[in-house]
Image 1 (cartoon, helix red, strand yellow):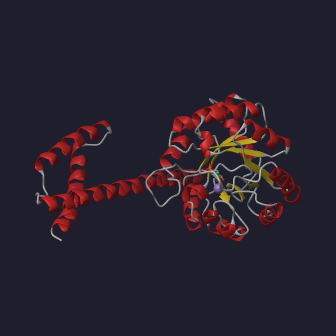
Image 2 (cartoon, rainbow, N blue to C red):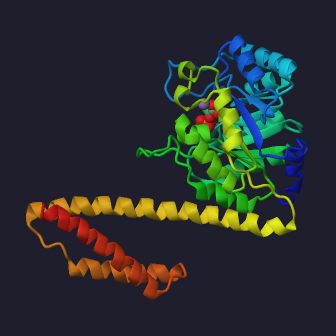
Image 3 (spheres, protein in one colour):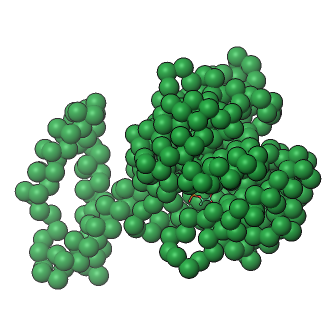
Length: 360
Ligand code: PEP
Ligand code: MN
């Protein structure tokens, strides 16, 4: 993976003046549905049509995809619209069928990406292909596993590679369906700046009204493309109904989203600055989220102290925390003065929270 500059060339071949857009339903449902949506998306910013044929469902019994028959519908959609076709493959058998039906872009889903045996099986089945292959991040936020999957594909002499950031599973409920953990994708991008990075706001958010905001964040972070689930009748979709948008909503989004174009040298500074600022925003959000979580625990302690009638300020504990944090801070290049100020402020906020609780 040393010289990965050539990976970008497949993206350049599209000759787009905007990020690459892949759109289409979560799942192919009927021939009519596929053709309807594809026709709505032709002559737009969309270059590649997506539709799941085999659906990895968490629990059995739900709709698990229409299977190979759907590949014929995709072929027909390509004939009618000229859009390239993409689908998810999870086994060597899927790969074989997809290749037989001349699918242009194959992506490896998040659950499959977490399994090195499965990725290797797919890499072997795709050996030497000139199709575009996209690897979603694994369901767990493990950067090495994601990179390892890409290496397996690269070692199989597949050169038109890219990755899709679709967020990560968490046990706790957050406002996202799959927590973006932007820093994982940012780290990926810094390690492999020439591997096209595509954002999947549909599976990150799980909700259509959050998709615009996540797309904008991705564009501010200089992502190369977006993959967005789009359905003619989202509410009645057979899978992922809550997160799909209509073709019209999608087109309006392209009008509203702000894309920073890489134009000339003078702009280079602004583009870099914007990218760094977007990274800072990710960390600032994280600081607030973590601090909020810390306060919730302080509130719980407040309730305990109230019940047991214990004083709020526990000096021994506070000094222990400070000593430990000053040492940790030093390892991270933070001055003692700063760590002291930071933790005094956090501690004061905890005390304020607990005082409210104890005196209620
Ligand atoms: C999908 O793209 O429809 C899908 C199943 O995604 P993921 O693998 O990200 O869950
Ligand atoms: Mn889906």
